[in-house]
Image (spheres, rainbow, N blue to C red):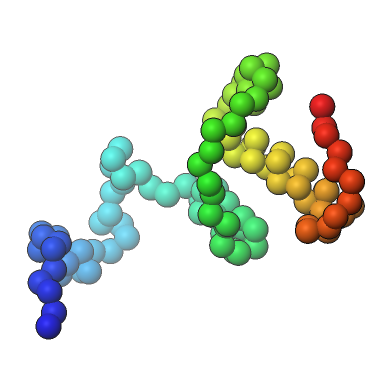
Length: 107
Protein backbone atom coordinates (compact mmCIF):
# COMPACT_ATOMS: atom_id res chain seq x y z
CA UNK A 1 0.00 0.00 0.00
CA UNK A 2 1.51 3.32 -1.10
CA UNK A 3 1.19 6.38 1.10
CA UNK A 4 0.11 9.55 -0.65
CA UNK A 5 2.90 12.06 -1.09
CA UNK A 6 3.17 14.65 1.64
CA UNK A 7 4.57 17.14 -0.87
CA UNK A 8 2.29 19.73 -2.35
CA UNK A 9 1.61 19.50 -6.05
CA UNK A 10 4.08 21.49 -8.12
CA UNK A 11 2.77 24.79 -9.41
CA UNK A 12 5.58 24.99 -11.98
CA UNK A 13 4.51 25.15 -15.61
CA UNK A 14 6.90 22.41 -16.74
CA UNK A 15 5.74 22.55 -20.36
CA UNK A 16 6.74 26.22 -20.52
CA UNK A 17 10.03 25.58 -18.69
CA UNK A 18 10.99 22.73 -21.03
CA UNK A 19 10.21 24.90 -24.06
CA UNK A 20 12.48 27.74 -22.86
CA UNK A 21 15.79 28.41 -24.55
CA UNK A 22 18.88 29.60 -22.66
CA UNK A 23 18.41 33.13 -24.00
CA UNK A 24 14.92 33.22 -22.45
CA UNK A 25 16.29 32.66 -18.93
CA UNK A 26 17.27 35.79 -17.05
CA UNK A 27 19.05 35.68 -13.69
CA UNK A 28 17.49 37.52 -10.77
CA UNK A 29 19.02 38.76 -7.53
CA UNK A 30 17.30 35.87 -5.77
CA UNK A 31 18.69 33.35 -8.29
CA UNK A 32 21.84 34.83 -9.85
CA UNK A 33 23.69 33.17 -12.69
CA UNK A 34 26.18 30.56 -11.47
CA UNK A 35 29.74 31.83 -11.43
CA UNK A 36 32.13 29.50 -13.28
CA UNK A 37 34.74 29.68 -10.50
CA UNK A 38 32.24 28.24 -8.01
CA UNK A 39 31.32 25.40 -10.36
CA UNK A 40 34.97 24.59 -11.09
CA UNK A 41 35.87 24.74 -7.38
CA UNK A 42 33.19 22.16 -6.65
CA UNK A 43 34.45 19.90 -9.43
CA UNK A 44 38.16 20.10 -8.69
CA UNK A 45 37.88 19.83 -4.95
CA UNK A 46 39.66 16.63 -4.06
CA UNK A 47 39.45 15.31 -7.60
CA UNK A 48 35.68 14.79 -7.43
CA UNK A 49 35.95 12.54 -4.38
CA UNK A 50 33.12 13.06 -1.91
CA UNK A 51 34.17 15.13 1.08
CA UNK A 52 34.07 13.40 4.45
CA UNK A 53 31.20 14.52 6.68
CA UNK A 54 31.96 17.29 9.15
CA UNK A 55 31.35 17.05 12.89
CA UNK A 56 30.09 20.05 14.82
CA UNK A 57 32.24 20.62 17.91
CA UNK A 58 33.01 23.23 20.51
CA UNK A 59 36.71 24.06 20.45
CA UNK A 60 38.60 26.47 22.68
CA UNK A 61 41.41 28.32 20.94
CA UNK A 62 43.47 31.33 21.94
CA UNK A 63 41.66 34.57 21.13
CA UNK A 64 44.55 35.94 19.05
CA UNK A 65 44.64 32.77 16.93
CA UNK A 66 40.90 32.95 16.26
CA UNK A 67 41.09 36.66 15.43
CA UNK A 68 43.96 35.99 12.99
CA UNK A 69 41.93 33.34 11.16
CA UNK A 70 38.84 35.59 11.09
CA UNK A 71 40.95 38.49 9.78
CA UNK A 72 41.81 36.39 6.72
CA UNK A 73 38.19 36.78 5.57
CA UNK A 74 35.20 34.52 5.06
CA UNK A 75 35.87 30.81 5.36
CA UNK A 76 37.99 30.95 8.51
CA UNK A 77 36.49 27.72 9.86
CA UNK A 78 37.36 25.95 6.61
CA UNK A 79 40.94 27.25 6.88
CA UNK A 80 41.20 26.08 10.50
CA UNK A 81 40.00 22.65 9.34
CA UNK A 82 42.59 22.65 6.54
CA UNK A 83 45.39 23.45 9.03
CA UNK A 84 44.23 20.65 11.33
CA UNK A 85 43.98 18.22 8.39
CA UNK A 86 47.50 19.15 7.21
CA UNK A 87 48.83 18.50 10.73
CA UNK A 88 47.00 15.15 10.83
CA UNK A 89 48.30 14.13 7.40
CA UNK A 90 51.88 15.15 8.27
CA UNK A 91 51.67 13.23 11.55
CA UNK A 92 50.44 10.12 9.74
CA UNK A 93 53.44 10.26 7.40
CA UNK A 94 55.71 10.15 10.43
CA UNK A 95 53.64 7.55 12.25
CA UNK A 96 50.73 5.69 10.56
CA UNK A 97 47.31 5.99 12.18
CA UNK A 98 46.80 3.54 15.01
CA UNK A 99 50.53 3.42 15.77
CA UNK A 100 51.65 3.14 19.39
CA UNK A 101 54.52 5.61 19.43
CA UNK A 102 55.33 8.06 22.17
CA UNK A 103 52.78 10.87 22.37
CA UNK A 104 54.14 14.40 22.16
CA UNK A 105 52.24 17.39 23.43
CA UNK A 106 52.35 20.39 21.14
CA UNK A 107 52.48 23.64 23.12
